[in-house]
Figure: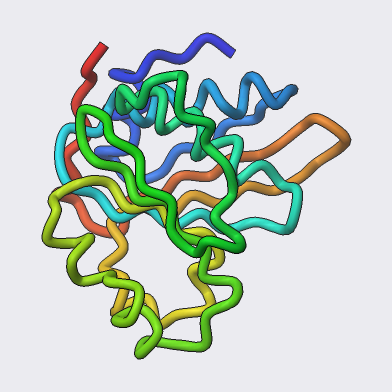
Length: 165
């Protein structure tokens, strides 16, 4: 897979991108390229089954946003929110254990939106999408032991994705 962040950003500006990866490294690289293309606040939802590669994608996104390798990017399943400093602050949320909008308020979601960083939400279906303010939807589907189909869809046309590499 030899895509560049500017190319992914360009395609996403038109609406939708579908990529197939053949390894966890390639899935992480797609996330990294997306992170490089992000130039402003963004709410990105990650949908997919358990083990589909959502956290792997988020780890790559963190690297593309300049989060130092010293930060071990992990699933926030039990912590609910992991925050990482980078070119833009990254908030990685897992809503699997939440019951609804009131709990979003309790974890400080509105404060995260005010920070002007990137919010990555795993298990977005556990909340009302209008509460999240989603800009970009990423769906990861497992096609085999290592193969993943990643679909990225802009929710509205003014998502700002410009290459930062």
